[in-house]
Length: 331
Ligand code: NAD
Ligand code: UDP
Image 1: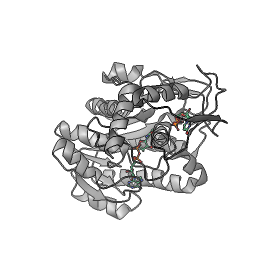
Image 2: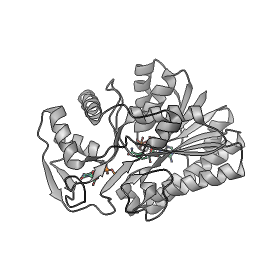
Image 3: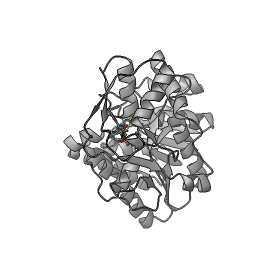
């Protein structure tokens, strides 16, 4: 297939590009490089032997996106592009609504105009909101009590996709709700390399380990969890990408929704201990107050993807830590 990856130079998109190329697909990337670097294309080539076609285009630039689609001949779009910093989205909601939602609308308009009928969308566990649940199935309500604009954009895009699929009955949509992607490519060439200060746990742990941040601030130890610290479902980025490959095989007209997680929860303190074991170094940390909008425990029920996609996450958090350390030692 000829596949367009929006956001394909980013953390998850770049790993997807590698896997798709390895399977023999013809991959092109559209990215404005707001949170990634053009060198990623050479890294993809180093791993696969193929440099994907690249369009440095902003999804907000409708005419430029149209140009990409004009001669594209794409069979499938995987839509990774978006801004994803939760805290920033609270400070700059309009930036997030504009970038993520308007960008998606432009993309869907161009897909429509050029007859592209398949799209996979990177959604997030945040769409489940603060319902008091800790383990989430795809059937649970979404869109209620979402604590930040970033999560709301994901929910709204899901709704837009559902409406588009009603209006165009040939459209094939897969919504993938990612839990907490971590790790890096085993080659050490690709990993998470945000242009800004990171706000996710793993990149922060790595910055503390490199001495770029003095200590990890653990946001709260009074949750109703195994040790009081926040519990999340961390999934290796390569497993996550394999979930996309499994979903491609099942695409059909209409909307399919899957959680991509491991079904297992790990606390912040457990993550610290695992990191210390993997690196052989002490990780300085301090317990501070809860982070605004945080939930205590968020774990995927990943049974639906296992049953319908025949996919399950195979790699461990230790694998992810080893791969991340390897990536950092080379970059
Ligand atoms: P990332 O920031 O590494 O990659 C996103 C890419 O999109 C970047 O390369 C960025 O330059 C590009 N981009 C942003 N706005 C754009 C625009 N207007 N036009 C063109 N390109 C644009 O993030 P990631 O971790 O790879 O995440 C990929 C997707 O998965 C995002 O949609 C994110 O919201 C979603 N997601 C990520 C996580 C996570 O923890 N990493 C969790 C759930 C969902
Ligand atoms: N976390 C933390 N300190 C940090 C960053 C994150 O204690 O500097 C905790 C956070 O409270 C949550 C877990 O680590 O319990 C994962 O946070 P992240 O931001 O990576 O993912 P999300 O909260 O979006 O699931």
